[in-house]
Length: 327
Image (tube, rainbow, N blue to C red):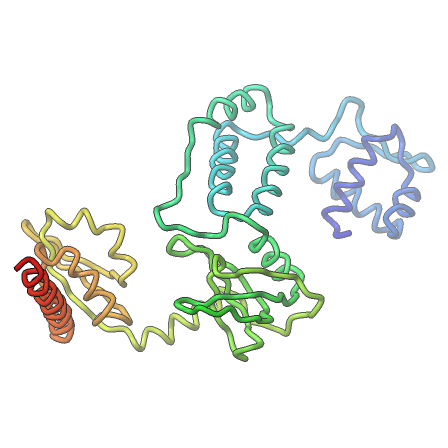
């Protein structure tokens, strides 16, 4: 037991009896009398009203009680909002744990805060974006978090992107993160002998093993390192967009490496840094091409022209075939 937990437990024991002997505290917590005296002194310095009598023991001033945990109305609102988010962005096991925790939190709320939560529960709705298939059933997140906390490996059945076959893997997860509507985990993969990123909704099954993890870097350190490596392969693109169309791409631009913009009366020049300028940005640009132009690079202009030519050739041949069929 750490010192904070021990001092809290001593305070609770002082509340449970009229007089508590120092030797009894020492015996219960397996500490010396000198440590007991130091802990009692810490309670006194924290403002707990107690007195001691040599040869008798310690007592709290009559009427003093450790106050229950109290929450403000704003904190109560935060709890119910978080509960709604958990229902959409966590798997079934984590949702169950959070629901059980919420029952305990609600139990210590004052009457006014309980009424506030009941009134708000049906007034807050959190919906996933279309196409979001983040893991909302099963226990994948729960098992991964246990593996990270206990530093254990997990066995998974995984289906990679655009693959028809599943692979069996042993991985050592170092952390999880939510990005672009999906949960991901970074883990050392025994199959590939290096770190890999796994999208959690593609994990078909998962089992916690007894195998201990090796020493790993933290998730933040890993992502910072990857970001530095990727920065050397980024390509700059500048797109000029009609101001009338700009509001419709505000949510999407960040997925393509948006870094800055220059606003004028009629248009906005947006700058992007991306690894996939000639394909990712090119295909995205075609969605609003009639309201935009590419300022740089020339390779991006060429790629868009190639895509347009392919489209025209394909659709022209289809139209010729259709016309022949009608004739």
